[in-house]
Length: 329
Length: 262
Image (tube, rainbow over all chains, first blue to last red; front, side, top):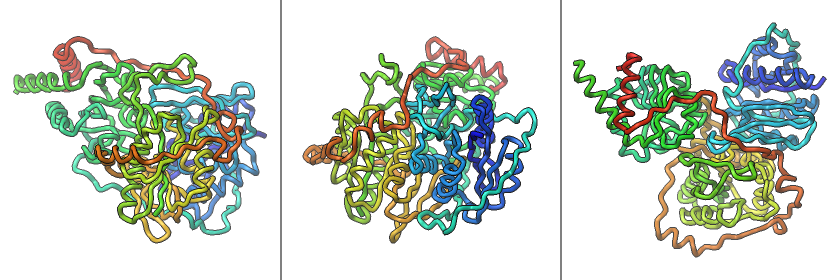
């Protein structure tokens, strides 16, 4: 039977959420194409994970090897090349994560399998495989087709699909596949995980966050927004470009490569709303966004939007809040 | 140390309003400002810093039409020694895979110890060219690189993982690293630098010179074909607050009051 592979992603003993998002989509596609959803897990002592995955897939391919303890794209490529050559899955789904972007393009090129990355939707239409992905920082969606092939590969965006449990546990069969690794991978070696030094402010604990993005233009404008944050009893957070420029420390970064926050109030100033940022703040209780571009994606995730120059709105807003607080005091 | 940096000339769209063009497969380019891809800017800076520390050369290479020459000039002004532009009408429609093949056809003829690319491009965001190029060249690679420490025949790099975590890897050289933004602080270009760069030669090569066939490039040589672009459907739309800045601020204050936030 045709199979749809999902590469299980795990780190430091935990299966990552995207694994179950991918399995949900794989089951949906498998039903339409009369294929079987298969979870593939590589690691060392990961049988417990395999048992968990078996509830979400018809089959689990388990490859255990001490050399697979920590993710190494080179080791993964050698193992997955063999599994794909032997089983010829219709589709292999990998997360568009730090691990997936390291692995998938090279694996696809080595096997000459067409690949589409960072997909937010997948569909087989007749004998055509169609994907949806975003371009220009999420301002445009693209529908694209992959070159006709017996086997395809995709990486999918985090949170593009909502993880669901199958109606009944699938009790999939766990098949232990002997590791094809015969020697150490020496071109690339995992050394260690590095955690950033703990910062002074824990933005995940704040009830009010004022988030700033590219629209803040210059470091000299930061005190102005910091005053607004203070007036609201909150702290400053930011999107990636602000940390890249060194204007705020990395512990203030909200998004996939930073922190996930859920404050009572999130005010987004000059943030366009690329998904990497949005994933980190969209579950805030109340979101108010100020941006000059009326089509900025951030407005699709906000409760209230203001299409205006943030430098005109922020000082007035700060004064009004300060006055109100002075009256109450 | 001889370093090759792959760069892309892309429109700046973070703060621009985009319109889909008449073909439905691209965006209207008129009115957009083009510049070096943000990630590649960091890759170039990293290459120049390594050259300043260890000596050697930096070669900037791009695939693109004549306007992309300005991005190569910027690279020369910032410290690249040589620039190569690969261009041909037959390249139109090339996806990231075909682009990697085009770059490979030339890079394989050059001497290098290190190749740097951006982790992705701001237009299509594929994050594919770097690792595929490494595969075609048969050299190890690392993506999302936030730090590079060069040693004898090898490098130790920090890769960005999710949630602020990083991993350290040891990679044998020659290697390809796709760098993440924030790895350094790209320098400004002096007027002198730009003037000097104008005198340097940009080598231009087409399909005939790079030894690929028509079927390797363009749509024929690609994995992916764009069928249609569209503005993302709005699942939830913010309620827009209108008026003068003063009126808008008053409305925000009312909302915050009603929610007990002030």
